[in-house]
Image (cartoon, rainbow, N blue to C red):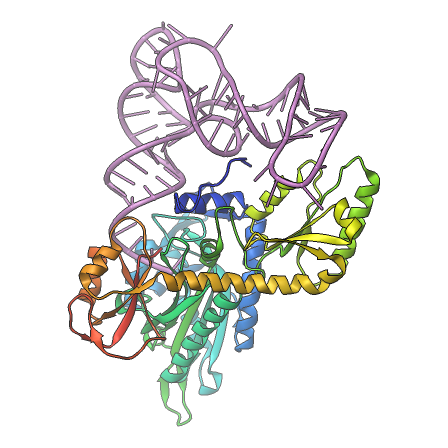
Length: 480
RNA sequence: CGGAGCGUAGCGCAGUGGAAGCGCGCUUGGUUUGGGACCAAGAGGUCGCCGGUUCAAAUCCGGCCGCUCCGACCA
């Protein structure tokens, strides 16, 4: 581990991100280009993400299952838009057991097709509906430009797949799960997000409508943090997912799919981190409180007393994820810096001086404030502080986003705003809805229509690009 | 996949044709410990890979691979 300071965010956000990911031991580069190793600390974070999401999926009636990694190429080809959208990024297996395969196998880029195949077999009657399935899996998309967590060729995610009797039920499900993502992002990851609908050109390949939650990162770029799709009857028709309704009439189902991936970890890093490194939201942090005992190792008396107190404090906080860093070969200062780099929300320092006063030092990672706290108050105070940190992270990220979201009067202003390498933030602007205007804006400014937010005034206006009447206000931004 | 930059010890780097180095980290011993401690002795390298030029290549030439950034494409 290098002793050097990390690159400041303001100097080079990308370099900062890469250094934080590796030095906080979240992930490493794999020998294969574009792939990554998720290290134990990063994986523990992912496991907490999984727990928080999985609980919500179960609470909304979904059941977990697992579908195969390999999908026959012909499955992908059954839905025209789907194959068109995904074919450039498919990994295809052509050989197995030393023989060329009769039909190439696709390594799943997503599982709509193979799950559709099974939905056809499992659904016969309206009584089988709704069918609510989720799977936790890895998927592969052949990416040309990769970044740890944000875009890797293989990534971990969950993909929900559901089938419904009516369009309305499918739409409700699609929005319900977007709501789950919003709730997760804001209340667990402390990431304020803008839920909304994707434009036609940004929607999922094969979907009727796509919804997204968009978040603003520390460099003011947008990150698509979760998506939910109403697939209409496209996949139901391609895979003949049909049911007999109450009047004994054969109907195609309406299906949905929705996903959140390890990319969210990148989002957490880029939303909260600072020049000292990572800052993890307490609810997801693998370690919520790190205790750094301080003593001279040759003073056995001090050492014993400090460690006894540490153990007692630990026992008094059974619901807090605690790590005790008693490495004697490292100075306290070194350990402070290390756990700050790794984003632990709360640090406790405890040494001989504290023992005399029956206190400890508590240091918050988010504000860097230090305070003396009587030991008998810890059981009450630590959970409160963790909640406060959780809340503060959300509030300050929200403030940052709102302060960097603008409404601009003219396209000239818009163009000027988007000029240059970096991003200056989000722009809320009217857009007529045409593919041409969207493409032009992208071409001329590098900004894309991130989403059409649900939360918007419905006053009509004029398209920022062509000036035509428009009802829809859109978030434009440069995105990851 | 196009443009640019970079590949030398775990990390950061120096080394422009003639003995592979520095700082940090690592190991051992000792002294230390409230914001990245100190002393001493050690370990650690096919200089990204392959080929070429040369008496001699980390260094020059060609090809390839990887990483980073910028574009085109995407969770």
